[in-house]
Structure formats: structure tokens, C-alpha cells
Image (cartoon, rainbow, N blue to C red; front, side, top):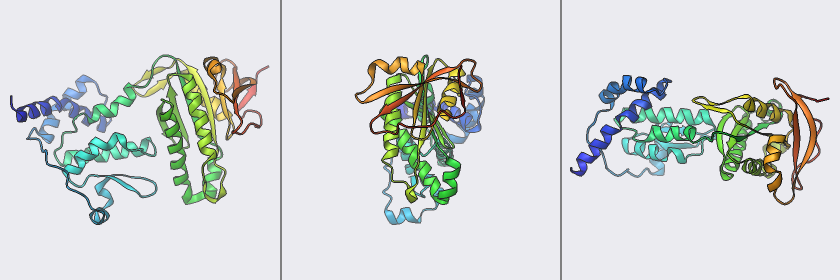
Length: 326
């Protein structure tokens, strides 16, 4: 079989991937029967013509400036335009580079993905492997006993009022700092919505490492107008169910309750996390018991511990939105 035949066979094998792409874009479930139902339409729209192996033409700074915003898959909150999609070659390049882009949040990633897929369809490009790559983060999320990290900006409403137009860049910067710490520690960012970021770790010590790195990165930030931007961080460990829509279970709710009870600059954890990290604490890091607390919606009180380190804030008021257990 010739190389051309191999390429075309590869394109044919990829039709199912493209059909899955259509399902995802339409919000349909990725079940076999649904994918088969749109497979014919994918063939008709995309076609199975010869592959185009032409090199990508260079895009000079002047030409780039002249392109409209619609010629880019992603424009961040600072107006920086990324992933040009004005011609077929650049669409292919954007498909290959998509997973390397540090998007500001999940909604930004979703918008860029949709624009890129529409551009691919417009240019008759089969997004080979793209949908599989986009589904891999969900498929690779850890199962079984996991440790959740939830980080939330303290006083975000007041901060928005003070910063006004500067708040969006601050939020993007916070998310970048949190995301970098999570990835560096080997965690997975599950979601970033509003002012909070939700991440998961297979190992509890890695979650603690990320929490410490996040707070240190926040202290190092040069925030506009001398603002004091602080994150509260909660850690909890449990065995949730991993579904198509994400993690489900009481442990997810407990992680949120623990986080929202904390104060800006504070890291708090449940006894389940403490038990998993206490024997591997880094030098200079300690855990201080805050006692047992009752949280809304949780059936039993939780023992809460505060993470302490010489370079972090240490003095905080009692936990918020929780009641000491008697």
C-alpha cells in the first residue's frame, strides 16, 4: 500500500473521531449509538479527500496585526490574540498546539475549542486525534481515594469594586499562579469558575505541596493599586465517584465547605488529609489543630487543621461559616 493510501486509510479511521467531535460540539452524549447517528453527516461535511501536507506559511507581525479578531481561536483578557485560524495551515497548527496553551479558565478553553473546531470544519480539515486529546484530561482524572484542593479569592466582590477594569487581569493572574502550582505538584485542575479553582491529586502530600506553593506565589504577587489579594485554601480527602460530569460525592461538598470556612492566606485541611501527610511534612511546615467543626450539609463534625510555615500568615480569626462542635 502506498503512503497516500495509508494516509487516506488513516483519515477514514478518523471519521469516528470527527463524529465524536460533532457530538461534543452539540452537547450530545458520547455514546456509540449517538456517534454512529452523526457519522454519515461528518463524512458528507468533511469528506475524505487527499491530505494536505503543505508547510504552514509564515505569519509576519504586520500581517498578524491586520487580521481581525475572528481570525484567532483565543483572545485572553489582556487582548493577546493566540492560535491564528485564518487559513488551513494555521488551523492544523492550532489543532496541534491547543493543549500547550495556558488558558485563563475552562470557559475560555471551551470558547477557543469551539472556534477552532468551526474553523477546521470550514477548511475541510479532519481534527485527527483532537477530540481524543481533549477528552484525555477527564479520562485521566484519578479515581479511588483522592485529595481535593479548593482555592477561592477572599472578598472578591469588594476587590472587584475597588479594581473595576483591573479585576479581570488580576483574576487571570491568580488562576495562572494556581494552575502552575497544581501542575508542578502533579495535580489536575478540574475546574476554574468564578473566583475559585478546584483541583485533585492522587497523593495528599502533593496537594499540600501545591497549597503551599500557591500561597507563596500569592505573597510574591505585585497586585495593582497595592491591593492585598489573598486566597483561602481547603484540602479534603475522600473516595468520590468520577462521572462524565466530574466528581460526585459528599467529599466534594466537604472540600468546598472547608475552603469557604477559611480566611485569605490560610490553608486548612481535614483530619483525613492530615493522616495522609503528617509523616512526610517538609522542614519548617507544621499542622495546628483548630478543633472539631460542624459544616452546613455535612452529617458529622470534622477535625480541622491549619497548615503553618514561617513564610506564611499564621494568625487568623475563627473559621467562617462553621460552628464549633460540642
